[in-house]
Every structure is written in C-alpha cells, then in structure tokens.
Image (cartoon, rainbow, N blue to C red; front, side):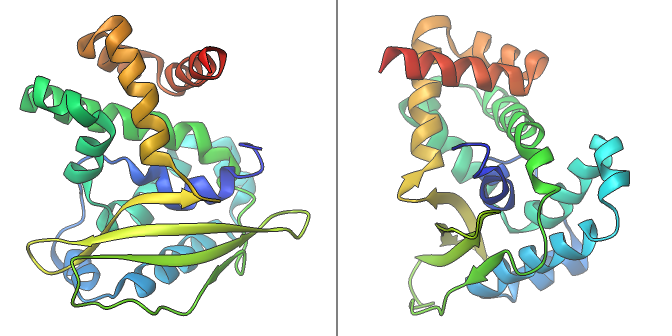
Length: 223
C-alpha cells in the first residue's frame, strides 16, 4: 500500500517533515500571499511542470529530483512546528542543535525514500476540492484526492497553520485518515526509548531512508 501511496506522500509530506526553508525574497513573498488551497494547487502544478518531459533525466539523477521536490515544498512548509510534532514529548529533552539536525536528517530521509514515486506524477493526478475553511482561523485543512494508477481515488488532507507573519504553512498530511506526523511520531518515540535521541539522529544522518525502513519494520513487528 505504501508504494501505491508514494506519489501522495511525496507531494505532501516529504515532506511534511522539513529542513531549513531556503526560499527568500520574491519566493517567500509569493508564498505569504497565497491561501492554503492555492498553495496546494501551486505545488501540484509546479511538480507537473518540472517532471513532464524530464522523467528519464530525473530517474538517472536523484539529487536533481530531490532539488525539484525541495523547490516545490520548502517555501510552504512549517519546519520548526512539524519537527517538534514528530519529536513529541522528546522535543523538551533535545537541544536546539539536536532539533535542527533531526529536522534536516528526517526531511532528507523521507524525500529520498519517496522521490522515485514522484516520477509517476502527471498533471491532473491531484484534484483539489473546494475550500470551505475560514482563513481568519489559525489552522485549516485543504482536502484533495489523488488518482492512483488503477483509477482509484485516495483522500489526502493537508493541515495548515498560519505563521506569525500571516502566511499559511503546511505541517502535516493525512492520507486516508492516517496522519504521517502521528505515524512517524510513534516510530520516533519507540526508537528514542530504545537507543536515545542522539543515536536516532546519527542513524538518520548516516543511513537516510534505510533508517526509516528499519523503524517502520520494527513498528510493524511490535504491533
């Protein structure tokens, strides 16, 4: 099932756990002016434009593929908040330097894990549903449907929060009712209790997506 949902995961969550936001200047200003539904539609359109006609090239050059993902996601993602949510209660036990390392390593691990699935993305795969939220609120959800290869629709919800600057940033993706922040928080919690936060960060930094696969297997075997 995860393979079939790799497209949805890459579009939203790769997310959705973040590294330092690199966008500045005009890009940051444009992001601030967008409503959540426009952010989601913009990401979908940007990914389609970047991938169409370049699949063979990107398949051979994963680093370039990762840069495509970064350019689409990072300006619209709440880095600090998402990483703190995943760390959960352990965030209080970490130093600022550890939190920064964790966010960077975890983001890189997830993008590398799901990058290949993104190559199957084509324009029109994501259907953004009409937005009925109140933009005066501090939090809101954008609902979409992702069309899989077999034509089935997968419900994908994007959780947004308004920053102090007034712009909307995504911090979680909920696929078929399953929050990836919650899912990975449970796995991270188990890993920290078993080996400690420093060991977890080191594993993510050195093993990347393999560390996530190990956590995932351990979680399934324990349940």
